[in-house]
Length: 262
Image (cartoon, rainbow, N blue to C red; front, side, top):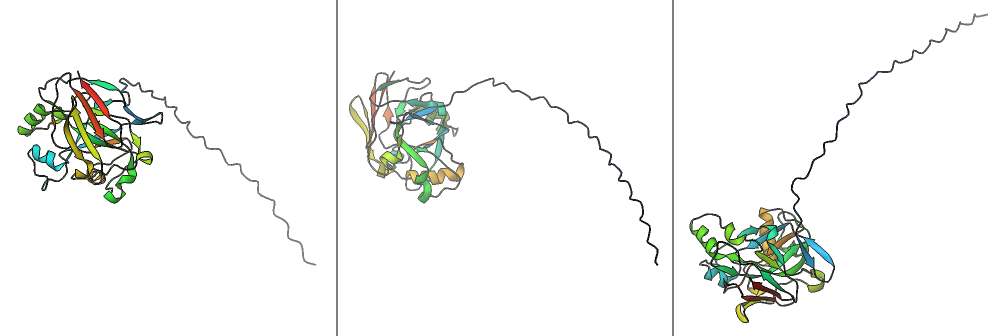
């Protein structure tokens, strides 16, 4: 009979020694203190009890042919150009109200420019004109108030003329009206009167560059975003105001904007 092979004794499993890792250093949370708090700028939305926060204000220069000519330019050869106003230049003017608008310092030739304003709800880069209007949240009546003597003086010196366009309160605007309620403003009368006398009168169809084309051109240079406003240009016959003058701005389909220069 064959002998049975003896079973080898089972090896004892050695316990693995736990490797002690150094405890992670506790880092103190660094608390930062806001040293200057800047309030956001809002434009009210008509009939909605809502506010539209403004990110940037873009403006186009010389966007009506007759205005371009009165400013010494050739609209048939000039590509669109843009400038910016500071966000806190916004002065909200409610319908049915007469707002006091302060005459700014350093100028003796403060001028009005009535404009259609488009407000963006979204944006992007390299937006095509065919897709541009879907980014618009709403429209308003606006004014691009200008210290013309300062603008022209700096232009003649070949220096930036922001000082002419960026006066405090230099961007009056009425409430925004949602596209869903008004549609897009591609045509319609636009006008401005001073003390009851019509000074500017035209139609939105006379824009050299439409709002959609302006969005396309702006988005080539900047990433447009929600909260951006576009002041889309003014018709001809811009002119000066004096203290005491009453301005009434009209765009068909939107409520009037009324200012008194003080």
